[in-house]
Amino acid sequence: MKGNFSTRLTHLGEKSPKSVSRSKTIPISMTSVFVFDDVETLDKVYDNEEEGYVYSRNGNPGHDALEEIIAGIDEAEDAQVFSSGMGAIAMSIVANVKAGDHIIAASVLYGGSYTFLKQELAKFNVEVTFVDVVNESIEQYFKSNTKVVYVETISNPLMEVIDIKDISELTHKHNAKLIVDNTFATGVICQPLKLGADIVVYSATKYICGHSDVTGGIVVADRDNVNKIRNTGALYGPMMSPFDAWLLIRSLRTLELRLKKHSENALKLAEYLEKHEKIKTVYYPGLKSSSYYEVAKELFNGDEFGGMLSIDVLDGERGAYELIRNLESIKFVPSLAGVTTSVSYPVKTSHRALTDQELKKANISKGLIRVSVGLEDIDDIISEFDKALAKI
Image 1 (tube, helix red, strand yellow):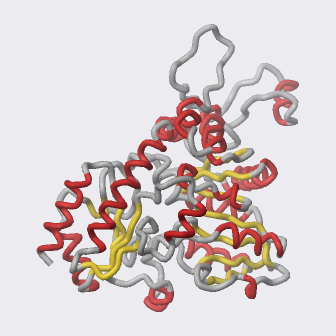
Image 2: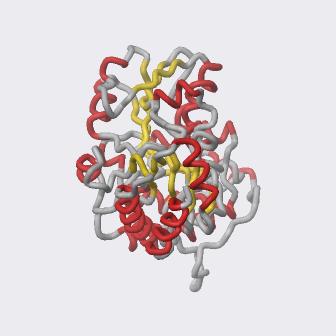
Image 3: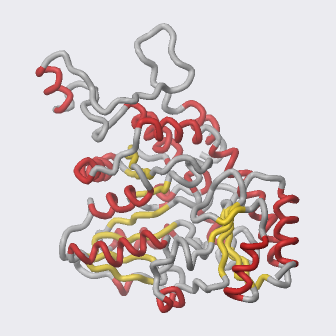
């Protein structure tokens, strides 16, 4: 699979209509509902005896094309799209637990995922145990009612690389399902299903889109798991618009090219920042000094480690505030993975809902800045950081 991402990304999803000619790009089916000539045909579609669409909450041609592409690069049987990453995450979890069940989750997660697991699921009497999945075995935390283990391939914001193979073995030993958020890596860098994960979720808003103009989420898995999540999603309703599906298809055509450049730039920036006197720590798995370098080399598809890194500024909160203020073209935004380099401050953005105690337990300091490295010339990115750090 290491050599044909570009071919898959540029040609998957091109189902031909019954015509001697067709649109070069996939058409947008901008409709909420579909027309039937008679009741008998409607029945056949509902009963899966004929292919067809009923209502865009339940499916749309654009959704199908997008799902085909994502399933193809993740080497999955099926996929399901949603209107946001949290929609995909929530539906994948809700579809697999009921009141009285138990979940094991990584203690370092995207803040929205952490809050959903901690607060929202408590309303439904679902217990969640947060575990340092990098430094201790999850074996001791399993219970007879554990149904799901939830982790991220590359953790947000500390860039820890989880040993998916090891965790999947323990998860399946206890008859639970492993759900992996692969947003920071994408299927180009890592394919968790091939490493033992049962379900993979994405915030498509990030690298899958890559242009900061779409909000979306995607789930990939085997057909049975996707159907279960699809049915749950149809009831809750967080479905993607046909236009957003079309925009994501556009973006996916260049995913491998973008990830290669993001990764190349991120490594060079990380190497520069690692030597800077005003930076205490650089978190990036592509650094040979990283404690996650070896596991990343083993689990990832090639020599790319993603476009995300974090830095701990020497002067803590004051230094972080100053660096953000001093940057010029590099914008301060509460998101990531656009074509231009940006920074985020987890304590006040993605992990704002965490208490000081929870932040400390997760090792997220007030001097931590998350950097989404873009596609600019790397010398320009480094030069801007150099000037901004010199003013602290």
